Length: 228
Length: 229
Image (cartoon, rainbow over all chains, first blue to last red; front, side):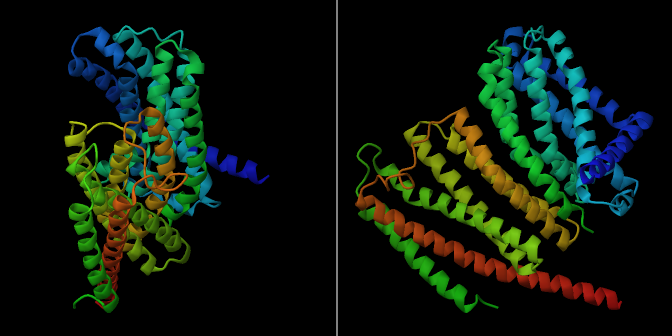
């Protein structure tokens, strides 16, 4: 019963964010356009040499994922603050965990949607063969996104109340998510070089471990962040 | 107001111990058989990072205590210890870099431990920035405590990831199964320096905590006066 209640509240929170997005399309538009721009810029950063680009592909792909994801994370709580909805959020009955999980689910959803555009666009623009490795890539992308968003959602809630908040989120987020970034990039590298999931397995395990640890710690910590 | 009595004693002890340790390490101890004189930098390098670890552990414990008890004293210790820890991590990176230049031929390389220490440095610099940018003192304390706890749990994961990624640094010769693997002539100055830096750390934390407490009280007073109008 309790679980069902938390699920219901979580869903209400996520659905609210999705509905806001469906009406305003603020966040998704910015993320998608930014993602396309990042892919475009890589071309100038590395030159037209396709073999060089392909060598750097796993890292570039994740840079695009993470920068785009961070843009979305920053918006998730700033929008609440700008419209003075934070107090109302705090007044919602029930525990704070469902608030956190609701926000997290929304953030993961938006980031995954952006990735769904980035991945094929990246493959087309840089002539990459990703289709054979696709199932593995999707798994790694999902695990990496969950890890990044778990810490990201917590830090976004925290930095929304700071001065210089746009700067502080990446400054705190990237050092803490080094294991996720490293794990995701290395697993992607193994997959893109045709190694299959077996080759990427220990990185995938690390990603799973990271996700579990922070899925436990972050909701608990969230309670202290939201106190007013 | 000068330093407190405890602070003064710690300060004097730290000064003596560091001076003695450096004398032993830089003058008395024999030069390394293969690395030569430059190896002496280890007498500062290794104790620095160990002290930094102690500092960040103290920050973690004080942060948990703060969230639990809401005692501003715990928060004062947390921030003081983190600040001193960042300084010692900085010293570790700087001395390691100097040693690396003459031994490996490069100032920096992306070896596992170097990378880890750099990550540690960025996490806690971020911690100090977070506190500086918070709009009110209670928020700074709460956010800081949350970040310190998060960062502390992040370290083993970082360790694992970076270990798998690459390893070049010589393995630890001090903390390892089966006891230290270095000669007594080198071990003694190392331990004296370690004791010295730990004393120095305690001295800084005691004094910095006192300062932080004064700052907290000043802020509280200002708040009261503001309310009276």
